[in-house]
Length: 279
Image (tube, rainbow, N blue to C red; front, side, top):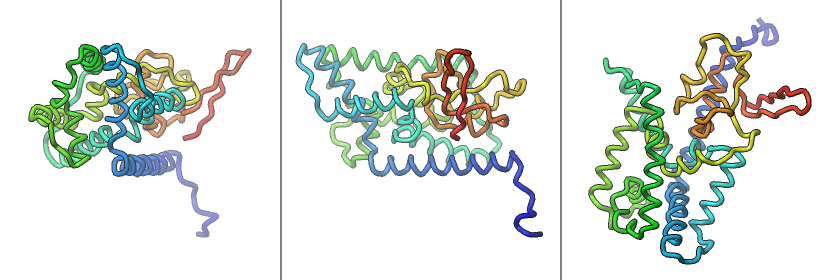
């Protein structure tokens, strides 16, 4: 049989191939950022802490490197969604590595994955806002410096920078707790505890950078887009929880009907939608 006579791959085979390509591309980008810029998360959050510290001290705000990084990540998120979380954040990459390594080991044991009920997920997702509020309040009150040595992300930053000086034992204990959570659930820290994730989830995102689905064309009782989502959301831009989307694109890869797409432009006049699939 000649090459031209070979049977074209099925839609399922093409989807599987595309999923593998997207997965390895995303992993390569994550590893690159992890190796070259592991401090992006800490630097951006230092910008938040600096702003509230200056507000509490009633002092002027300088456009220093932390503020520049914070502004850059905020602008990037508004323009392109939370791709920083899904691709560039070293803490998020650590969570992916820990979860998938232990998930592979779990598959060889009789112990199943821990299933978090959706109401519990929604409740725990609010904790990161409390963490953000607590840190900002500590900065305003001028007490953050006294407790910052107990922060788990400070411990992580110490490991990546090769300097553990000034980091308290409690920080490593809390980091250990976070890693246990990462073993139990994908994107545990990002979804439940990350204060920068709380900031990003509250930002507006331009429509062309959102993953959306044509719900009227979905197969009944499918739900594969939500099942494969690491943060358990439907790719619906009009829902309150859409700010949790980290832009990983797994929902688009998993959809058997190709209904989930990255670009959705409202068509004027007729009220319809133009959907541009750029998976």
